[in-house]
Image 1 (cartoon, rainbow, N blue to C red):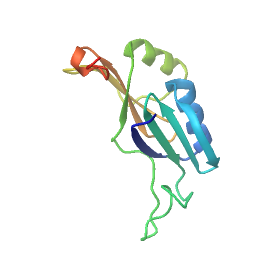
Image 2 (cartoon, helix red, strand yellow; image 1 turned 60 degrees about the horizontal axis):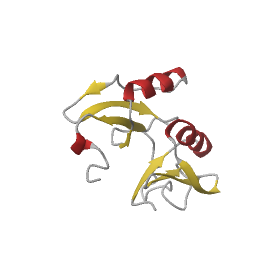
Image 3 (cartoon, helix red, strand yellow; image 1 turned 90 degrees about the vertical axis):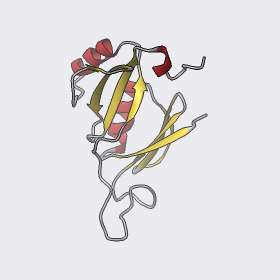
Image 4 (tube, one colour; image 1 turned 45 degrees about the vertical axis):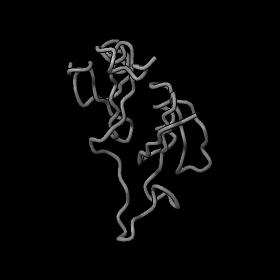
Length: 135
């Protein structure tokens, strides 16, 4: 069961579904309309909305502006080997915003989904930085 939802605005919902399923292990929960889909990965529910695809998360604001993809806010996907996964995704043509960097809790890299939304791959190097740190 999902415990967190994140909405991403994407140019092409079908391309985003393919990207997240193929490369990052998400499962499709529903895709009831061309402008919306819901995916899930280990309790993270990812809501994908096309701009102008209302009603819903992609609909125009009262001033007429449309939501758009991009920015730097992101969610992180914990991985066992960020270097190996980065190499595999680069070989598959995925676009990266950075090289792998090492921080105080782990190693990370930022990649873009097909619409330019950032996703962080994070490999914890300290036990307390793991998602299952309490286990």
